[in-house]
Image 1 (tube, rainbow, N blue to C red):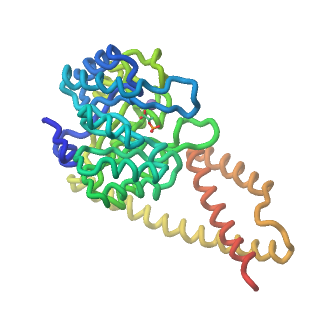
Image 2 (spheres, protein in one colour):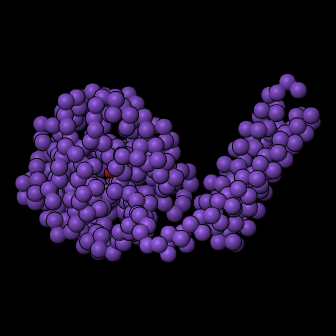
Image 3 (cartoon, rainbow, N blue to C red):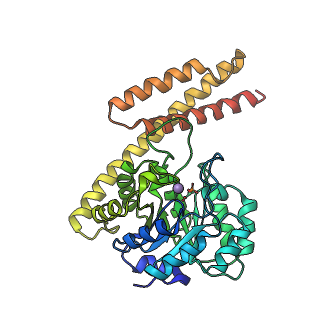
Length: 361
Ligand code: PEP
Ligand code: MN
């Protein structure tokens, strides 16, 4: 089926999911682009991606080819029939992509964090009807992501698709960017009609994790995937650890399981209902336990206030985190989950104790 550019969400829901965008992190040469694209035609790829303007986190590494690479994009369009997409970060990029009939654009994580830049792009796209893909910002701030999407909606753009690419976090961990799946899930709850795709490459930072992240995304009902693919990944000029070869992409796409999101079988429906009612009961208990815990935090807050002791006791917090982490992991819970949960609980205790400290009693 041909992609309908003026209504990508209709295309996504009526075509076979997932929508697949693939292509290199960066355009490096006409040869690299064409040879990658020609191999991608043999996979389920619908749209060819390549970054043209690539300011990296630190300068002095490859920073993209710039405008000349747009002609290579046009060669991909002509020679493969694939639609093409690139990243824009300002109005001069928009001028250039319009001049070169690039089919669609994405807005990168760094740009989405800057409302000035977003507004500039919105203004420069006035009257243009192309699909606009909006990545999440680097920091796990749902409002910033929503804000960028709303700027486009408010200006009358309808062809908007979100891209989940993970969130920056300090320290070395399994992922280059934490998935924090609850954020895109919340975005989908707030704007149910907004299509959302996952970029497992930038979440993973490493090609061995792309399969598992892609499958998770499909199981969370994402509409598609954007996967960095290079004809010669290990010699790529940017993001070489995370790029797949076209053959690896083909294999990955063939192995993905696309599951149905509706329950039609009666037995399944009844067993789901039963398990969910057990979950409901446990959640009620959980809320009661949390409330008891916060009541204790409040009593401790009163003691701290009476005795002029600071709210944060780093030794105690260190002990709580390490102790619960050890116990949680021993029970098979992931350390990522335990840390997130404990941080949230700890923050709420701090909030409660701050209110105690600031009260006049
Ligand atoms: C990219 O897709 O190549 C890119 C730079 O992504 P992000 O903006 O998510 O870092
Ligand atoms: Mn990249």
